[in-house]
Length: 299
Image (cartoon, rainbow, N blue to C red; front, side):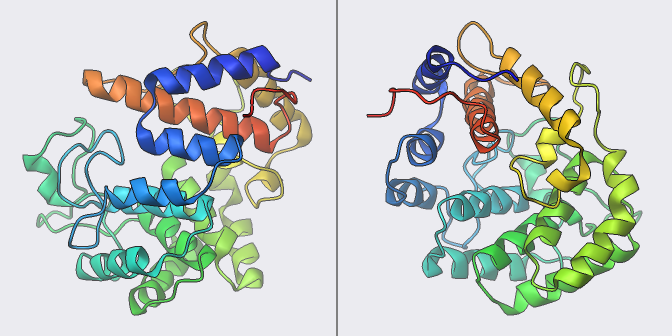
């Protein structure tokens, strides 16, 4: 079993200080160095618009000032990470979600993206008449995190029905959809129904990941879904598979201390931003699975 040595961990932290955004540095301090949660929330507020939504490259590939659904998912992920149910932030965000819902749910991206800087693969998903489609990505994750934070709203209730319809009748087409669906099923209160829906979707979910830890290109791996033990996603993979992918993840650390992305970088700014985000995420996964040696780097 391979573990990240104290020196390798130190190199990763140094990489974060040299490359990561303030939001990820504050998250790192909270997650791995015993720092307070309040600075994470303070920085996150800076990404929230007066309309209640989030923008400003919180998702590095969406760099415009207009609120977008994907930013909402990331904001809620970070709030859940620090167990913050800040009512001002959440009330504003659920209000924004309600005002931008399509068939009760959120679209993948709003068409306002076309006039703002963004990665070329971010394009609105529409019907033949040009109207936006609702999407489990990010609706499932948004609803799931709202449940995790115990934040109720009329929009959450309506979007939850969309997520149930997808879980019980939809098709899981890619790794992002799988991750968002699993987040919903992880946190929704009706556990019996969630487990039944998961059982139906298991073959489709497994088809979205590569069991070869050395697979190249923009592929998803088991650890992209199963970032910590004890989750529904972790139960989809046997111990040998998880251990093999963790070993390769430890080995994949680069000489500069970070971990690389497996998708294209389309502008210089995102290189550092994604590098910090991915390196922090990797450290968190390794920590969750007990693959970081105890060290004296915490101050």
